[in-house]
Amino acid sequence: MRLKQLNTFILGLFFIGLLSSCSIVDPDYVKEINIFRKKRINFLKSREGYLNLVGLHWIFNGNYIVGSSSNNDLVFPSGFPSIFAVMNITEDSIQFSFDVSILLDSTKQVSQFSYSKNQLNHTFSWKSYEWFVIKRGALYALRIKDYEIPALSESFEIPAFPAVPSWRIKGHFTAYPKQQKRTISNIYGDTVQQLTAGIVTFDHAGNTFELESNIEAGKLAIIFKDATTGKETYSGGRQLYLTEPDNNGNVFLDFNRAFNFPCAFNDFTTCPVPPERNHLPFHIKAGEKSYRKK
Picture 1 (cartoon, rainbow, N blue to C red):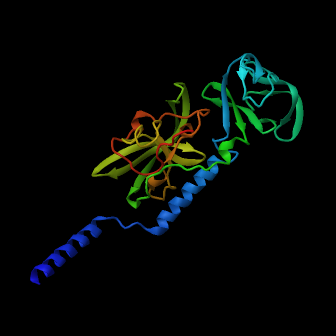
Picture 2 (picture 1 turned 90 degrees about the horizontal axis):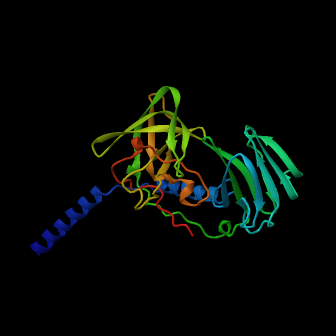
Picture 3 (picture 1 turned 90 degrees about the vertical axis):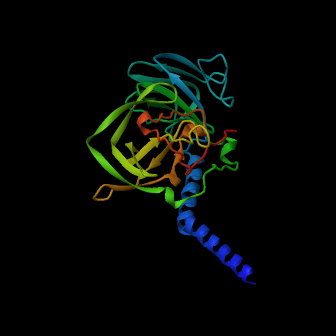
């Protein structure tokens, strides 16, 4: 009897130790992260997202024949006519001449249109397709979207690590006296300018680390790699928005909200490469994992 009581006592101590060693996950926090991840999926499938991209062409000064024929200078998706446009690019302007009626900026039918390279806010539409010119660094590219691509109506999930509150880490943000432009690379090996705001420091496993913060969509953000990069997480790295600094410069880095670059989901994107100073030597098993493209 005494042996049985002793075994029960020892077993009880074991479970108490086990429970004390496990972090208690706040269900409200998990719900918050799940909502964040759902919004991520909704964004990627939206018109502004990246799942609808079906083409990317780097363009330089000169004339281009445009259409679905493989003999064209710019080959558009098969849903387009064999030849439907001529594109002329000069040092200062971009001009389209169309063989079919095109919708300009979703409002006006045109057969020809010219605009300055300083005004890249115009879009062109035909059936379910939309295309426009973007600038990355000193280079220009033509990007094509299809709003009826099957991927938009299919089930879509992003693999992710379970939400663990301990990966919400307090840090400190030290702003530069003046925001600075950094020259970094993108996935194509070209250099691009990134606007940086300051340094974020935080502690992990008894060590202090620092990352340079950039400005993304008007928010403080970091782009980074860690020991999971190229293994459990996307090979190009991930990014993360910081909380707004308080009056003392305190911020939170919630790595459960770390998310993949657009290039993880679509080949027709242009993404930065995290600079070496933003490479972390430890495993961050939090946030989005690698996504296997279909």
